[in-house]
Image (cartoon, rainbow, N blue to C red):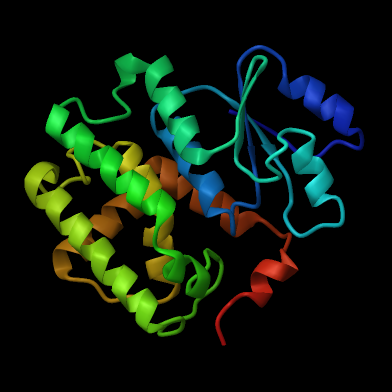
Length: 238
């Protein structure tokens, strides 16, 4: 994987991103949970791609992102002339293009459940995302514990317990690492930042996720970032 920082000329950057192969446009690794999901999936399964990082909360952030996608959000996957601008759509596209890698579980029942729990993560848990924003470099133990957030934590715990007991066999959610684990990896990091206590089996799952090479690499690179995103920091709970 190659990393491209922002070039002075957006047109040059975009032209380079449109070269053959896959380019993933992401935000700061410290903050961008949605960027983390396809990045971890692609890295975990050895899918080659070029990375373009757009810094969040800068004066030119919106213009930079809109140069890649009219959605104005990251992540964005550029695949030749195609633009895929939603994290779950990106993962589904990758699963279709690289079927031999088995990004989704091979078992039909497990695959259906994996898609369901990813869709629930994609569309739900608004309280968790609001009160416990991802900030890998920070530590806020005990903060962000609204009633809604506690309910979200409880529901995520239920999902993990069911997946691990039915399909995980004390490994990842569906045995082998899959899109589902990549999708919940930012939650694992949120739980670490905010000091969420979990049952021993779920805490052990979190440790396995953190130890996965793709997740560990993202975390290392997030810790090495020096840029900040003021608006994101301002959203941190008191």
